[in-house]
Length: 186
Ligand SMILES: [Fe+2]
Ligand SMILES: [Fe+2]
Image (cartoon, rainbow, N blue to C red):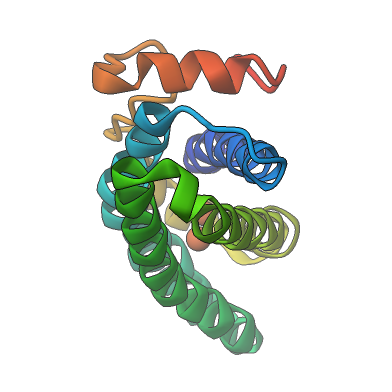
């Protein structure tokens, strides 16, 4: 597998783990139980810092941009995924607001945070699946070796705290929780 695709697949694996945590938390909250608000904060900070500012832009500016050049037919699919990136930024704001309210008053806000977690978790799963199953196979078909060399050179500079053996910063507990689903090693 090309290094750039390996990076994206690893980041998607971490995001799949996050989606699983969010959906599991939504179920607990629906049963009237409480969830780890600190871990929820870590997830929101991770998504806002790495997924929104690095992962999505990297897909759009490098992978999607070259795919558009190589195949005009890819445009409608890539436009849809671009819209999902924009939608994702809105959904994570909703989730952050719900999480802040939950931090203030757990008992009164369980239903709100449960709904936000469930919506966001399902959205994230669908988005990752579409990229894994539709975008990456098409990219492998239509990109040239020279295209990949350029994209790889950018992607291998990447440092994601949930991928590889680099610094996890505040995300060690989140990494361990993702590992507990048997997804890794990432
Ligand atoms: Fe994406
Ligand atoms: Fe992605």
